Length: 198
Ligand SMILES: [Zn+2]
Image (tube, rainbow, N blue to C red; front, side, top):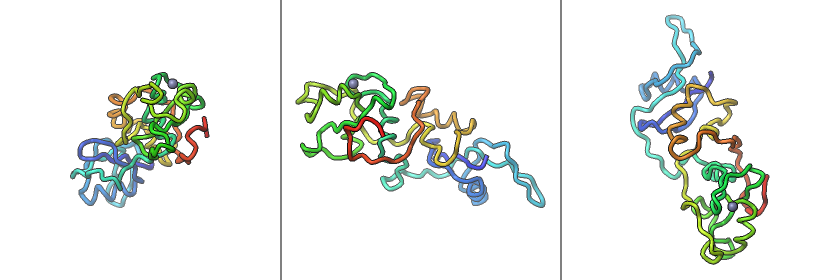
C-alpha cells in the first residue's frame, strides 16, 4: 500500500496521495485517519501504520479549477454508465460513440452538458440534428459529474485498494451501477464524436 485516498470533510473522494504525503498531512494536523493500511513505517521510536483513507478536517469546496473529473471520452462513458442516452440500453464500449446533443454545426459546444454517450444506431438515426429535430429524447440531462466511480481514482494505482472501496462506493451506489466495466480514464481526443472506438 503506497497510496492513500483523501476524502473531503464531507466524505467525498477527493484525490490520491502517496503514503509519504499522507503522513505529512497527518502530522500537519490537516486530516484524520479513517482507515489504516497493513503497511507500517518504522522510525527510531515508534511504528506507525500508514493510513489508507484520510479525511480532511476542513471542507475544500470544489471549484472548477480543482475539478477532478477530466473531460474525456472515457469519463463521459463512465458518467453515462455505458448506456446510450437515447435508447437507454447498456453497450460494450466498442458499440458506443459520443454524440453532440446540439450538433457542432448548429453551435453545440464540446462540454459535459452537450456530449452524451450514444449507441451507433441512435447516433446514426439522430444524424446532424438536435434531439427535438430528430424526434428523440435524452434519458437524462447531461451534466458535469463531480466525481466518478472507483475506476477513475486509480491514477497510477494498479488496483483499487479494498479499504478505499466503501468510500468510492458512496457515489457508485447512488449514481452508478455496482459494477462499472470501464477502467480506462485515459484522456482522449473528443474531436471525432462519430468515431466508434479509440
Ligand atoms: Zn441507442
